[in-house]
Length: 327
Image (tube, rainbow, N blue to C red; front, side, top):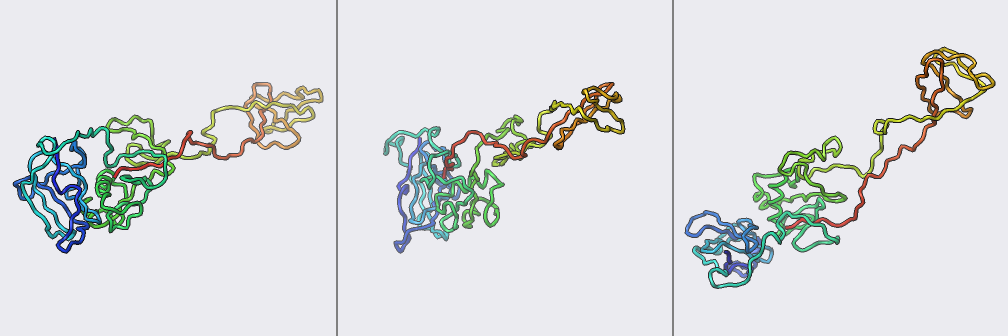
């Protein structure tokens, strides 16, 4: 079971009465000097807060939950000056008889880093858009969201995807970069359909390969595919164009061997084995394919160039929405 302590959801001030903006709240195992203990965002104790929790610009501490028993805390200002330190604080909750309410099923709530499509375009409380903008602390100047509530997602992305850019360069740890007011670049879901990794903890299925996807589909965040595609001749199905015709008036020399038609449309002379007659249309032939003719002669296939060589649509039926990621 779980409970909380009186600091949860409170606003803290310094000795001058100013909000303790950027303050740090640390949690330790009761009776120890500095052994960390997790605080959680949910009553089921599945979504840990960073340790320490950073207070927002108004000096507020978010809602937090702890395992039953005792806890040790230390509250500092942004510079690390201790404001409050206490040990053996009783965790108050339903199982200790001082609280009530039901528990939260962690399988029914979103976790930091979860992605959802939403039929909307603007900002969404508790979420940021997958738009390749940045998140960071309130002092970071991040372009999508600059606020203390971004810390959990900042640290999650830092650890989960090393290919995501940290503005200013990656430091030793995610917490160091967060405290250094750096910006984390969000995944870029613009104009993109999400697909499953080709392995997802198993052997690669081979359903998305680099030869056609254009990237390694076993790498998180890899991008591939094309909006349109222009076929090459090699990509066309093997085929012939049987466009036969006769020009009864004359023939042409082919490979140095004369063969022609007489006025009645019959052979005026036998074409050698594996030779043929190129038919003339009188208007100009843009493209000629000459096939091997059987012994005794034959007619060549004659085709005009066709097609515009333009790219064709390669997009599945789609509808646009906004992809959001949980803070």
